[in-house]
Amino acid sequence: MALPSQSATRVKHAGVFLATALMLAPLTDTCTASSPEGEASDVVIYGGTPAGVAAAAQAARMGKSVTLIEPGGRLGGMTASGLGWVDVGDPGTIGGLAREYFHQVWQHYQKDDSWKWEDKQPMGGQHAALDSGDETMWVVEPGVAEKLFDRMATDPKITVVRGERLNRTSGVAMDRRKISAITMESGRTFRGRMFIDASYEGDLMAAAGVSYIVGREPNSRYGETINGVRSLLTPPKFPEGIDPYRVKGDPASGLLPRVQPDHGLAPGDGDRGVQAYNFRMCLTDVPENRIPIEKPAGYDESQYELLFRAAEIGTKRFLTLDRMPNRKTDSNNLGYISTDFVGMSADYPEADYATREKIVKAHEQYQRGFLWTLQHHPRVPEEIRNFYAPWGLAKDEFSRTGNWPHQLYIREARRMVSDYVVTENTALGKDPVVDPIGLGSYAMDSHAIRHTISPKGFVKNEGGMFVKLPGPYGISYRAIIPREGECENLLAPVCASASHAAYGSMRMEPVFMVLGQSAATAACLAMDRGAPLQELPYPDLRGKLVADRQILEWPSPGAASQDAH
Image (cartoon, rainbow, N blue to C red):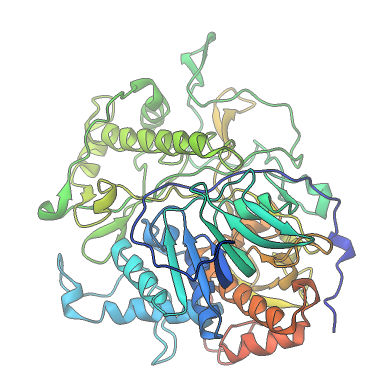
């Protein structure tokens, strides 16, 4: 049975763009079988994100040899880099290896010796319990998360390669419509029968000539209502009143840093806007484990004028302190002016490595300065300074990167354009999916894309979105494989085929794990059949996914008693 077509969402070729991967930090490598043509394995995975690790584990379970390449050196992506308060939507929708992983998190925190800085206790705000024997926990310290991902990758059929970045200009060797090998900047080459791009950026996908998009599609492209430029008339998150000019009331003085003039686009128009990035900081108020936030070198007070003016109009809280075990936090953006470096992410997806590293450092500089400002600057009201003063970086986290998270939160970058595009209509249940490989259930959530000026002359954020869903929805197999006629042995479970609006729901780390496992399953089955991914019969794929406890429909068996989240 061939996969069904989706003529309603078939789009013209979006063009081929080249781009990049992330940081460097070589650790110990494991050797793979080598030959003059390169090191060979059945499945080559680029990106040690949760999706990449899940894909590696699944392929190994299916008897395949795997090379897992992590350019930044550490496995686990954002889940192991501060995103410890894991966004999941309805936990009942998460099955397979992802469910196993978060059961292992639960098991870890059942042990008394896992609690060093406080007594063992339940974490507030958790989801309703799943069945006995299938318990999960959705808050996890970064170091614990990384150890569990490392453990997932210890199968002897998995070779983990760290600190190698793809040569994005000439590093993908194609044989007709298949990738035969990929070469790193170092010259190291990896051959495989199937390839999975599990990176946040989609570098391998782009270098292989697969169609993709960066930015927001117009609503008209897929018949959507919440994509594209967002209206400035939506209610603000706090009262209006922030003057946008360097000298209040004086347009001739110029706009404040990162405030952009109106670009003249109407609500619903497309643009190249990318939602804001930040670091998810792991903070603690335990004196013995706390490293004070220091004023960063090159601190520029003008970069925090928006913070000062927000405080002047009554804003009290500027970042989250969501509690994790051992009196640590997952500290994220909160509200209008916060840790998101709004307007500074648009160049990242297609930038070269050097430019990306500058963007990453600029985000770190801004965010360190932001926290220092909250704690120390005299223009911040004393009440706010006192509230944030007890918090510092956790001494026992991120020891190899100066206790700062090693992964910038790339909320979106490239998105593949395939024969099926997940849209808001999919997420809202208006476009049923006939070939699901997993479920999404989180709201369609986009952080701000730019600071700009409202019709009344005040600073406003544009691009923010949080649209709740009526229920879980299926994610099509066709959304993780290139369109027919493009690459036949590449899957992209992270930079999947979705509109900007729908990607705001799909981009949750447990969903990436689900899609990573499903991608590896498809790769192994197609390999066994000797067929292109686009010709894999869906019933065969579905049967294996169900056997491996993936959840493909809702309500799922046993889900009737689950609370809605």
